[in-house]
Image (cartoon, rainbow, N blue to C red; front, side, top):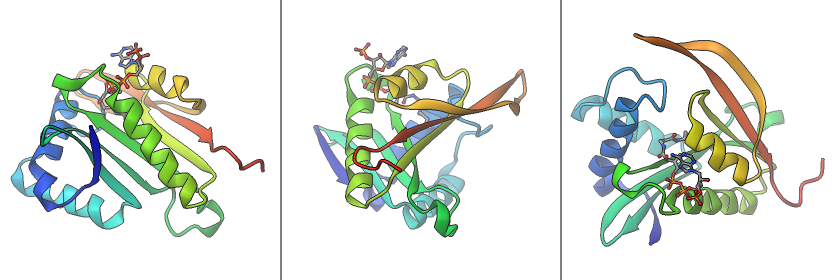
Length: 167
Ligand SMILES: CC(C)(COP(=O)(O)OP(=O)(O)OC[C@H]1O[C@@H](n2cnc3c(N)ncnc32)[C@H](O)[C@@H]1OP(=O)(O)O)[C@@H](O)C(=O)NCCC(=O)NCCS
């Protein structure tokens, strides 16, 4: 299992993983990406990400993750980063999500970031359990802010203070 920087050649596989999650209602996108808006989303993430990585097994992308600014350009908040991670449906429960989080936290530490936040829908049990295991705490719950055709969900903000930063 290898972690690599995401590049143009990874676009289709990353979007496929993203579309699986959209179909499973694991994020707030209502429609899956087509080739055109998928490329826009991918390019925009590549442009803004502090780190955008893929996890590769046997030349296949099995997961991806990113670190992006939390509230970009606000200097007082620049020690905070948002973490995002997705695993291919065929490769869940194999430790890949754990590996991506570990890698991205190491990157954040190297960049002297102090806090990491994951923002997720409040029915996302798998992520909640995984993040809790990794030391994240739910510090924000915005109830009933995400409206889907057949349900309304909230947003959880799960934070972790990184090692070595005490204030
Ligand atoms: C959440 C997600 C990343 C987990 O990835 P994963 O590679 O399957 O996770 P891991 O194998 O590293 O699991 C580590 C632990 O998390 C917990 N966990 C993972 N999936 C779980 C599930 N479906 N139900 C309950 N607990 C789960 C377990 O405690 C697991 O440990 P165990 O295997 O010893 O039981 C994956 O389900 C996913 O891609 N979900 C959709 C995208 C998403 O929700 N992203 C988060 C928003 S940023």
